[in-house]
Image (cartoon, rainbow, N blue to C red; front, side, top):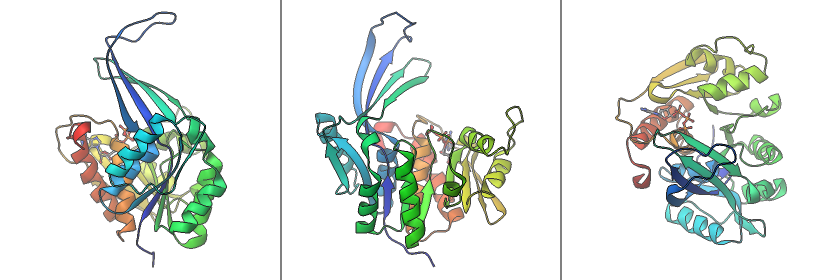
Length: 294
Ligand code: ATP
């Protein structure tokens, strides 16, 4: 039987610099922006905040000793995330530059900065000190750190959950430790292409088919499908979870909301299917709520 307890999120924290523009500049051109804001972001921080809504969440991350790091730390603390495993160094805190145009399209440039200095040995020590029930990671920190987190979980009986975003080629050994791997449909197709399960030109298939294929490589897999909900593959069985009919206000961060909530429910003792059902409800609620009110 798996233990219950906290979620340790091993991941990134960024200062999101959000710029509103009438239109994107062409190469060599300068345009004036119309609004500016700075908010807490990074997949690790976002998923830790989502997990903290439903249980104990500890963020293992690296920030700079700059004003951005101080702002991120106080925001995370205020949102209920345990921050005692966050360390700070002379490398500046990570930044994401997000350009938003009136058509609602985002263009994003991420600078990893301090996130790229999160060290494997420190992550191992942090996990060993807190002994979480669930370790949740993404790919905005170095891959060797994610592998150390997965190996630590495997060696201690904790559950390892991976949201491989931004998506990249993953060692099969890492995939085999994921319980679950959480991906959206395009990430699912990219991971399967790397595994040569889909040819470059093949029709990717339905959400359930993607989940079933991924489920062969992981302990369990969850494929999210926006307003259509999600599919869970575990032990050769695929379960479909219908999307909730909500009026979306802002779908930004729906995937992070889903991953954080799912990890928190797993840490409380839910099965993957139960946790995915609850995460589907909480992510639907999030997209129906303006971001600043979540
Ligand atoms: P993002 O990159 O915007 O964070 P994503 O592509 O990683 O999102 P999605 O599959 O779009 O992830 O959404 C994750 C989950 O959020 C879905 O499985 C669903 O539970 C919920 N969700 C997203 N959009 C909607 C919607 N329009 N209506 C209801 N639920 C939604």
